[in-house]
Length: 463
Ligand SMILES: *Cc1c(COP(=O)(O)O)cnc(C)c1O
Image (cartoon, helix red, strand yellow):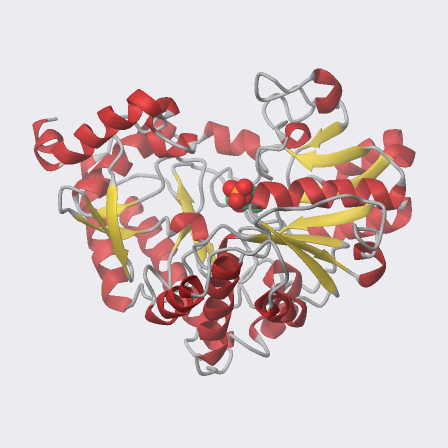
């Protein structure tokens, strides 16, 4: 592809250099473009909805740091808070008041959370959440769903293989089978399979961990009754329900999916948006559970950089900016409430941050609907959905409800489509197994630009 080389020469050189000293040239595998082919672009800077690479190409960013950049890149309020905090020292390893300020924001937004512990990554949050579930129940096994990602902690790196297999096999070399055996695997959106697992292992199950919208096998919404079914099963069998809202928290609604659909998990994992682009994550629960954590309780968990003042400043500034955006009345844009549940969805955007999430919902839905229609005009079947600032599409004739469906999508076509969009200045996730994101900086003009690139790109990948 000569055009490719011409436009990406500096990125290519940067990648060659990086490959000498960084494994595969990257610090997180998806960035290597292995799933879509070609060479990764190297980003020089971001501003609002745009990324600029080292060759001077501009892209509309639909990755948004995997959802973290809710306000877009280099938002002035966030940059100024971070700069101010940095000038006062980067890290103390001692208490600072801003930690409690961010924690109060989170506790105020999530009805199931009385207390939180701040950590540095979603991986740490999920790892600590399952430790807490085990500490609280004295049980060992965790049920997870095929295609759900909870970071790279050993016992949660179990996802591939037949969804029907009762025991998971490790997804990665270096994960002992003994660890993987503590993880029971069920297909997403299949409450009956979970019930069968619980019937067999009920007394050993410490918790069920789930992404309330799956965003790591494409964008997969929960079917009606799936999440509430998990809640009932946990109540009946004394297991704890863990919502991994690292991606959905403060992204689909103020208070996450649990507020949107009025389902209370026992433990919640947060990350991405709450750090506003800095390394910051959290886990939280009701008081009696969190009091099991050290120094109050017997479950040990710690971190040199946890509650880092600069990261916390970015999180506070981000959540403040969301709250300060004026409210817009529900349904103002004439949009249908987000699926899967109607009545409770109205409460989703109240009381704070409502305007932001309705704006985001309107625009991500416009993208999902627009892409589906543009694909159809070119004779291509596409499934698409959106919730708040999170959305996605997949090359599939039928609905995508679980990991098997996700694997059956046309990933070769996605790879071609990815490059067609990249050449037209739109940065999609470099893998068909990822959700997509927009920020508050993605205004109607930006959305229109994406849709026009999308139309041309469908033409270029049609059969
Ligand atoms: C991103 C993500 C994680 C992992 O977070 P890291 O900060 O990458 O460790 C965990 N769970 C979900 C649902 C995620 O989307």
